[in-house]
Amino acid sequence: MTGRPKPPELIELSDGCLAYVQPDGSWGWSNAGLVVGDGASLLVDTLFDLKLTQQMLDTLAPFTRTAPIRSLVNTHANGDHCYGNELVAGAEIIASTAAAHEMTEVPPEMLAALNAAPGEIGELFRSFFGAFEFADITMKLPTRTFDVRLDVEVGGRLIELIEVGPAHTRGDVIAYVPDARTVYTGDVLFIGGTPIVWAGPLSNWIAACDLMLGMDVETVVPGHGPVTDKQGIVQVRDYLSFIEQGASARFESGMDAFDAARDIAREMSVTGSSFASWGESGRISVNVETAYRALDAQHQSPDVVEQFRRMAQIERG
Image 1: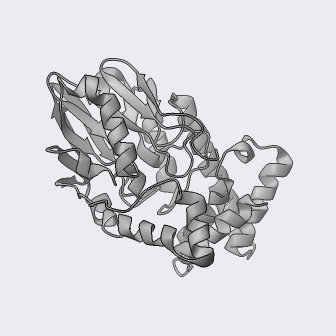
Image 2: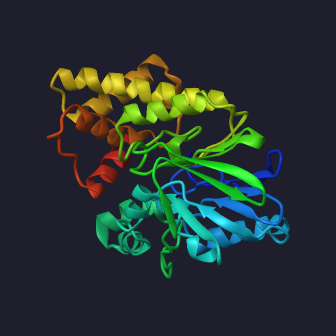
């Protein structure tokens, strides 16, 4: 995945559930969802900037005119799932306690400054996020938080919010709609792109996949990439298990984390692993760093700028 090649798609799933999918699911091109009830609806996530979020809300208008958005769930703290919150006027904004706290740590002003920075840093961040407009965003934080689980009723429909983080971030939440056998996963699933484990441990994320595999689910809406089913969950679980095992073996041998990431990437390429064809392959460097932190509480990962440098370096080959 290398940047959005075509316009977003609104997919009517079943029983009043919709998916708003932004191809091609690479950095910042996230998905959202809408659950329509009787006279009210629930929105799962906003998008990375105000222009994109307004475009989505305009697309959803035929459904929300008669069923206004009363609740907005942010699945986690990354800006591509919450920076558009201010445009959903009057809605209760729900997130896990951990996600709400994490949202304060990377405000849109920070990404705006990094994109506008002179020299190598600005060029680096524009290569990831240059398509997005972070200026003039007023971050609107959740008005309701929860831990572990929260059942929300909207327009006569039940949506089960289940905290599965820390995994991708510290406060990941999935939104399960039992009457439609549909789950909105946020960034617990990347389909066709490499997952990135900012928080971890990887074992928590694997457990989240196992939880979803045990649920009565037919349709799966990932945080990035196309709508899928349980096979998509299996693929992400298999990738995480592969990285966890590979990182553990190299940690035990004394290999440096960045060297381990590059070595695992070479192994995937040489063996023809399907994981090697996924987009954003450089994220493996972050994933191995997170695995090393779980193995050694004293392990110090580099700062975020260096993490992005390393991802870019791996993707340059």
